[in-house]
Image (cartoon, rainbow, N blue to C red; front, side, top):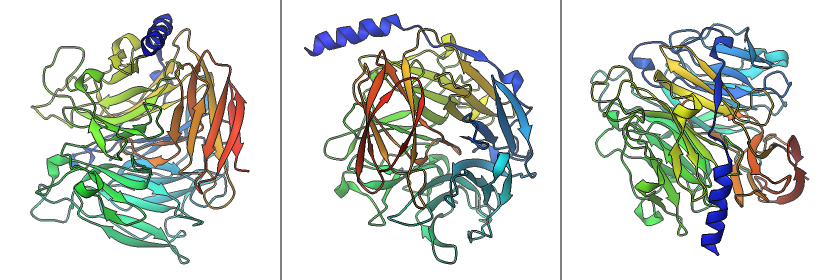
Length: 495
């Protein structure tokens, strides 16, 4: 039976065309991520709807250049939007901090971080002091957030890179990280140590089905004994071998999380210098490195003109051809001019096949650019049901590509709503049945990527299916079930 199913899947996959994108970068305002050593890392993009027209807008980090807010006018037309000049920005994450239904931004900086309160028509005001966020002058490079219990406001985790005040730095000088917890007066900061120079953080359910904070750390600046970290949010402790957590040391840059096997537990993609490590969730709650044959390690440039190791930054799963299987984009680029690493390092577009392996299609798709890419996002910028791509580059122009892949499958979008402080139901899990590829599940979270993320309806490819059975496990553990038609974005409200 398994052989017959696999053969059927392979025949279905053969009917799909290779992914194809059109370069619309000329439609964007001029923008690049610039700066010296404090901006070798960072360079994220936040993608969200800031004006309520159901089209994703873009906030792009600028480094020493001012950050940019770019408004989507439809049909791949983009205009610069007014924004107070903010420099030193390494990244940003969209989040509704005050549950008013308008998306805000948490802005990471080499310097004091900022919380920008969203207002009507893509307006933003600095609410850092008004919301009682502690003042800091660190070099922040990672962020994630979650709602603890019935809290009206989110708990925030901030990852800080090198301690710039250490006279013996920058090597062996990783700064400490912080957890910011809501109080009646504002926020209270707690130290999260040891810190190993994180470049990405993600609060999500782990292979044990527990809410856990994952930190991906840059080994280049590690203190002795540094490694990737997992911190149990409820028990407030780092996991170790007794928990099934085996330490892994790599030059960690970004995190992407998605259930690839249909068992309800997310696999985790970790980008780095050299191998891009995919960890497969195991039944006992641990993780195992994916076999090399899966095709995701992407350790060298795939265009074949440079044999030196690649440097991976932002990674993101998304269904490019809507066949019901998650594909993977990885932004690549040299830190600056590191001679031991590839300098012409093309981005990856890894398409998942029916047998669960991935094949490289960036060249065929037209997205294998070789700038020093950093942040990125897969999002449907024109509302046609196909996920498009935006890429932020260091010292090179911002890029955007329209997905024009022919013969794509059906699709569905899901926007979650609930009452209370956690209006967007962050922490919910969406499971979908009925697509050609079997069960899919996605965690609705804030964090991961590299220095940027998105707050948009969750996108699922359906293949030939014209409807889907959707189960939402809400943050409080309750469930609701829905039968929904393909070809549109649905608002799903907690009963």
